[in-house]
Length: 210
Image (cartoon, rainbow, N blue to C red):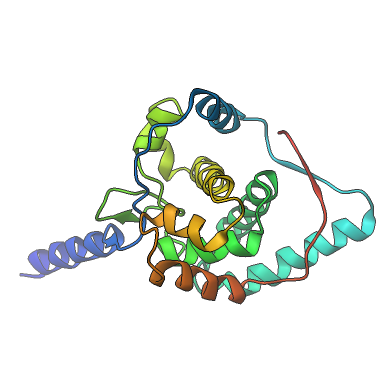
């Protein structure tokens, strides 16, 4: 009986770990060749992310941001090393795509609840709930990469930037596209609300490795 109970508990834990989330359902749309090439080039860059700062004040401001965000994220991601790596990657990939890190953190909160292995009912994967079809449209076809921290954030930020460009900077509509719910207010409003929780005075830096 104890052995059966232990297996039952383990099975329940696995179900919770892999439980589908309700977010993430970008819709497949054929891309113009030039857009596809540009997105593919952005995804393919594998240079290590290194932040560059114009002066000591900018570096200090970034470190203050990192410390503040780490404290806010501690309850959701208790391990410091994992938390630091996530935040550093969010910041780098956000800046690289011309996005506000606070918006990306808000989107991650809504999409996956900061769960690295989140899987939606539609099949979207990882922190930013990227649909697998993107790996064949603009990547190398390896869907397993969507559970890799940097790859997932690289795809997610690139896709969100793409939708913002399509919508000419209209954040509300771009978020709707990201979630596959264009024209509906619920999802964009949730992300905009979460975005506010991660706001911080802007830090002007230059990310190398583009």
